[in-house]
Image (cartoon, rainbow, N blue to C red):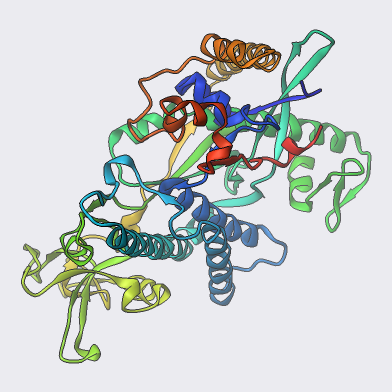
Length: 499
């Protein structure tokens, strides 16, 4: 057993979803790191890449000398896109895993045709999702970054942190349990001086449940604990007047930690240790994945596409490329305000990235302006991405939900900490018991008792990556890594590689 036990929000929630998946994902394998599918779930690959891009945007905006000029904004946008695409491109074609309900049925094809169609479908999916990652980062840079910076100062971006949740008594000593976290960003409201945790959420669609779910999300509770503990220590040291700090170099807390100048200045002027007032959630819509008749005909098997106008528009081909036209919305407004729809024989859904660079399409969407009639009536939005009529909203605004702020509650925080401490202490004992098993039969029995399968979270709302292990043959159950369907999990936090 390690001299330190580490956990995080993902581990906590994974155990609550299914005890067995917690073991497999975070404790299985010769190194005890856990294992993960060799394929990456589509939603995680896209969401993770977009987060990388958004982090670059916020880091640039929080750097000394940031002025927010148009030139800076566009340069930062391009750097953010590059970072996001670099992250996405680690998942080669064929390594993106779609939901079970979208799995392409190739059973009716012979082996050669099956290989050809599989390759074509995988390539299309990869190109489509790559375009989506770029488009989402560019859309945020164009329509959401500046309003955020006008209201908030970005103090930190994806800073790794940890705090001691409790201590577990193994057979030799008391072993500390550290809770790791990495908030998307820490914001200071310029008007009120209050602190907020920023949380980005990429989702397929919106309904009322998402807003209500955010009210009970443990992310803000867990991340806020580390921030308040750390800033409280810094505040105490700064108020005591030593060690020294200055506006240019910041504050030297110890030999390893340097507090940024603006953070040090913020803490110096506070009369009491800072508290996190709330969590600011921003939702970015990827669009749902729907059956696509044109793609189904193109590949000869039922295929879905991403229903997002960031990567798909309605296209009408002209005699030449110069004559072609695009609409981002099927529904539109006429001059008098009447609603109408495009003529289905003249317009077809089409992947934008196959006709122009993604950046060029975002430029068109961004160039949309509000048209106002002579009498002052708002007619609607129009621009080079909407050849027909007007639309009710700006196309880039349509992929964002207004930010939701959930205010932290002390009682909720206490309940969460006590529940999490109890759960993780219990899990540490369970892990130790399984690892002490002397043979395979005893190990399996201990797994059944300490990490039982839930069986109600196997395939819905999406299929668990460990279904082949839980319900597969003896070989994959005994050694899933040997099948090459799984790899040893890569550490989510750098602290995991420390003793």
